[in-house]
Length: 169
Image (cartoon, rainbow, N blue to C red; front, side):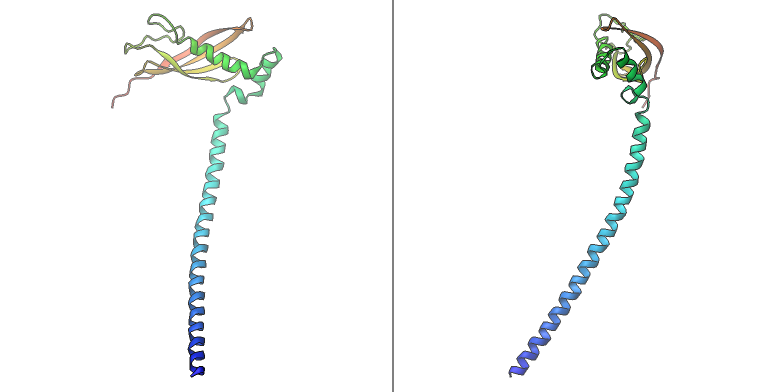
């Protein structure tokens, strides 16, 4: 009787071990398959990150913060560029506060009854600015030059401008 019990226990143990082995093997294969898929995704994402970094560098090319020559132009004259760049942008945005219908820089009058406002400003270098303007419905862009006078005053000069045609939907 003892021999039969030991035989049954032995067979049961072998079956249990085989079941554990097969189950563990399938779990490991499943994990390896998932890891391989994730590695492929990581490679795709690495390629995407590299492409986005290249695109970001291209977008930052015409930007005063990344133009060492333009920054050194101001630094040679004794300006702190970390304060000067926001000052220039603020002075341009201050032109949005005006009386009447005519904006001091934008050569178009509002066609919607609202005011034309400068929305976005990008300093390209130590002399040029690109700005976006809108009255809520119509919008356009400006190309300006600027000059610093007496360390605290700015003189803006409109060089080129255009108004986009209205979009019909």
